[in-house]
Each structure stands twice: as C-alpha cells, then as structure tokens.
Length: 210
Figure 1 (cartoon, rainbow, N blue to C red):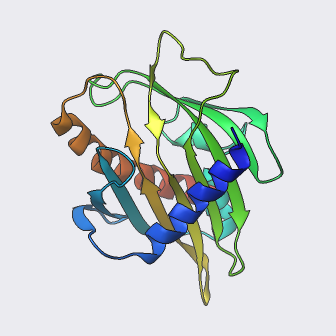
Figure 2: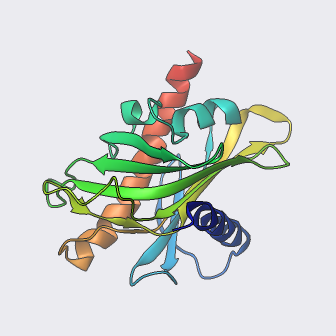
C-alpha cells in the first residue's frame, strides 16, 4: 500500500471539492458556520462542506486543528477522544488513528478511524490537511470500537487579504460511521457535529490568543 500516493489523491480530491460549487445543498447555518451537503461519489452516503470565518490568524487556527500527536485538538474537540501517529511516512504524510467517544445521546458508540494524513502549505499561504482511510498492520480492529471509514476529507485554513487576524476555514467531512445506524441518525448527526466543531474551535482560538 503506497500511503504517499493515497494521501496525494486525497489532497487532490480536496482541491476538486473546493473548486466545484455545484450540487451543494444547505442544511445548517449558525453564526460560526454554514453547512451544506451533496451525495458522495466515494460511498453510499454524503460529503459535507463547512465554511466559516474564525477570529484568529491562519497560524493560530492551524495550531488548533493540525493533526499531530500531542496537538491541541483532543483538548477542545469533543468528537476526538484520542489521536495517535502510527507511522511517519514523510515530512508531510503520516498514518494516524483517531478514536471518538460515544455520541448523539449514546446512540452512536465509540468509533476508531485509521487514516493516511497529509499536511501542506500552499503557495498562497493556505494550510491544507487531507486524509483518507487505510489499513495498517499495527492497527487491527479493536473489540471495544466500531471501525469507521473516512473517505477523502480535510480542511483548508485560508488567509484573508488585509485581515491578518481572521481566517476562512473550509472543511469537508465524508465519513462512513460503520455499524448499523439508521440513516436518519446519520443525517442528523453530521450537520450538528460540524456546527459543534466550528463553535468549539472558535472558543479554542480565542483562548489561544488570550
């Protein structure tokens, strides 16, 4: 399995999602984020798009969300219980395992996800993270978790010209939660989860600046 190639393919999918405005349908809007969705071409589910402006510099936002061992995300993101790097492939690519707590009033039991993750700074200063599911010999399924699958997903921390203390965060979520969940639960869970992600991240970047 060529993890580097898979990571690059996920990053290319992120770029295509970013550039393609067609077919997105709004499903939730808060003061922090606008959430939309369209059917996924990767699996029998949806891809979700979150877009919002955060009151912090791109570097501060990136500090809060970057997928690294010991990072800040497990401290503020209620949907991430643990994050560990399983294997470093290169300076930009690693294989990681994320575990999530039970959610949606315990209707959704704890999950684990194994992904190859790419991190990159683009020419315009945008910070990109992209990920997709993989298998890894050091990560067999564990009995206390349902194995979920992330299809190409990630986020862009985009600088705003002339506004150094504000950042556009464009995120794409495309997850098969696994298990035997009713589709109505899945369809309700993701928009609420994404809204919570942006709300908690907004609080985290404000605390980081304080």
